[in-house]
Image (cartoon, rainbow, N blue to C red; front, side, top):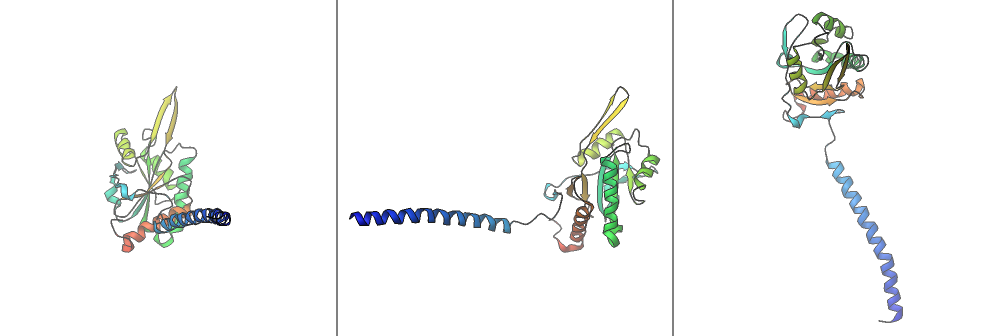
Length: 219
């Protein structure tokens, strides 16, 4: 091989190797983007737990002492939150936001039931709990139970809470999530406290649309 040919080959290698590398990178990026397009977007603003098949249930009482279970609410979308009436921040904020969700639902508001489960049944008597939740919206339902029933309900929804009595002072911590249950009684969506009323309303409409047959029932 002549010196000229060697130099020419070296020049071609110097050009072709970076070009091949650039093309490979571009192809990889295109493949990654294509995969992203093929993957279905989340149907919810919250965390979709449909595929986890939660066996969520509860048996609690309303202000009249009537026992209410999740089966009694079948046929409606349910937004369920845990909290307590002495809560200084998260609970009133959540209930005010859920009241706004009902207003945003407009003509579909009757297809939504908001349920507030107290984690502090010792202090939250039935009548007091009812007055508290209905101050936000007269359709809201407040439920309470024994300590064992409250624990069972919270466990079913993977909700954490803790009540500590320290020198006569009651300290309470609890999850601020709201749980969206579809009209068939399946937990579909965990809604973080950071979501807006409009985002929550959109998720509620999503499960109502699914209930009308626009999604496969098993989706």
